[in-house]
Length: 173
Image (cartoon, rainbow, N blue to C red; front, side, top):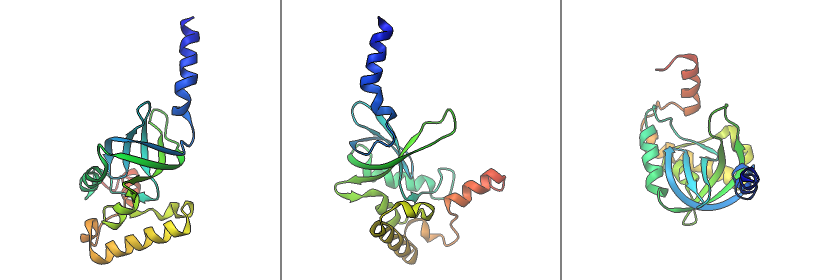
């Protein structure tokens, strides 16, 4: 009987947690993991959210902590709307992440991070954006670079994908 009840609860409440992708969701930011990853609670489920179309410095990388702080200042404890397009597959034992554009107060937070110079437009995934979004993100990054905003104050800043590649090769400590 207990197994039947637990199974029914899993079907009723657990299905949302396994949906792929989750689509459009509203919730409150309950955690900021790094400069491009959040935890968002809907009240019944906490989603790990990877901000779509951008890449912020890794936590151990130059500007990594600052990017995290800037994201936290924008959204931590606030209501957000998520427009999620897919779920990232992760290695066994790692929590999956929803890939989403995050909005707060009508503002595209992903785009704001690029515009303020705390993240790159992740061009490897630009084809997944609308042409209008792709153009806006490209222009935001170009403007941040030209104005030396955020991480662009360091003209030799290393992109996070290159940093991760070098870590895998043992080039960086």
